[in-house]
View (cartoon, one colour):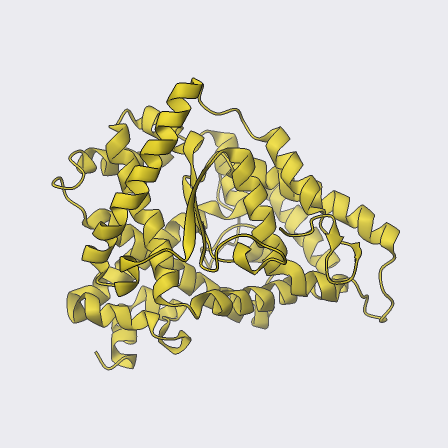
Length: 377
């Protein structure tokens, strides 16, 4: 696994204490639903079953041959603390190049071990607090990056995480059939697993883009302090649950304030790719009918209405973290996928997985005709 408190390549303290982030998240995460040991075992078994039977449905809907054999990755049913721990491992992989660069100041003098250790404790605690909040919201997640960690035992293709307490909490909240809801969730998450299996180049492409964006955001320590101050001032001007002033791009969250021209280009590309992945997964989960999930219409309706009942504090936190912007990615990406499929069919759409040059731009996400014309479809 990833060496959490120290930089594995240099033997020096890391600028983010990953162990502290994971332990902080586990300590601060809200308690999950109360279940007996027997009920927990049954829920885990049922989630694994639904994860397995969802794959043939993904194959039927997408036509992607990668869905025939997914043995390169694991499906794990986890609790909130385990989800947080898994994400610290992935973050360590994604941010390693940038953190290594940040260890040296502009003058070329390396940061002292004491300073790096102190910084790691602060950032680790902060990251843990964010993960604690997110760990009670995420139903599932495909993680393609953890396999790249030093000494990792994760299969080469990555791992799919199904967060059992959150799935159970939501199905109870919505008062829907548990078996139907779990299959519905698994359809979305297994689609992500199939996407990366169909496009094995996508993982490294995403890592390159994340490194570029994070390098732009964090690489200049002098400007980072100034921009962080701008973020703080803006947050003070926000009202809980309200929209931030001057938010014209619609991305939301603190990234709104951390954009040079290079950052805008990097963020635009990542936004487009994430919209594609999330929108495609939503199209798959919405393609099933009552013959597969008998109560699917009820599930869709109640799940879509669920966000209206969020409290003021949660709405504020979601706005700060940009989570509502992520929800827009689901909508925008699904509209793109449906627009392409309506013209070129699923086979035409599947050209998107052939190489990075076929990925849609953010402009094309909002106008599928542009992508169709570029692809000659």
